[in-house]
Image 1 (cartoon, one colour):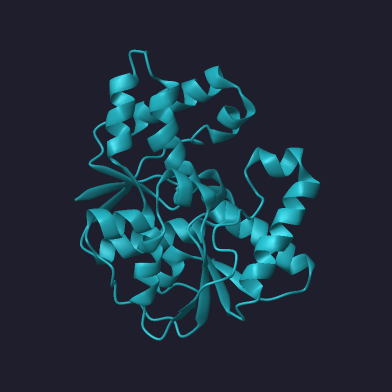
Image 2 (spheres, one colour):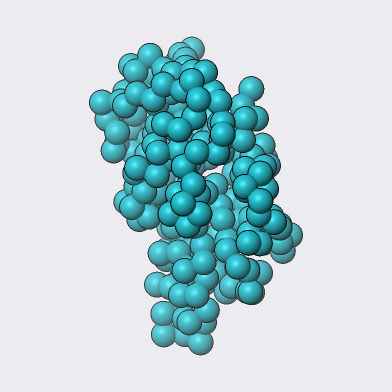
Length: 240
């Protein structure tokens, strides 16, 4: 099929290698990948701050950008949840409600798309490291994704997957939450990053770039390993 990439702000500005890795995996599986350059932020910052009208305008723009797309795939559970769960809520009772529901049905988080839509768990990747997986809140709670990324990781050659003792704890980023409540955010990062580090893993794997930045920030300030890496980078074989 032809797959439209949805590239979140953090990927566009700070981790472009993640978007490239997503494209690499999908193309290797035989699909056509396109990028629609008119796309913008999903609108979650405005939505979370209570600016409903501004978020609604961004949502309507996204409906226009991705109109007619066969499938929309993004490497962020948080941003995909915004489009799939909250766009229909924002646009309920408006002339755009049907289009919002239609886009929601065609929008997928990357790992979810591979497992649930394509029925693929083994992409032929190899990663000879001990890793643990961090469940981002939106992917876990809004999209109900837990086993899908783990299925993909278990199929990677020479990869050892271990679980932490705080698997469902938030990393503390929460978008604007980390800006409004930095001390609470930092305390949450300490708990979650500490739990992940106690697995003695080489890498923390995430499906959300914002979680990666939060965990990396705390770990680097403490001079601690491990590093964080996006699931797509492991599956594409582009991890450094």
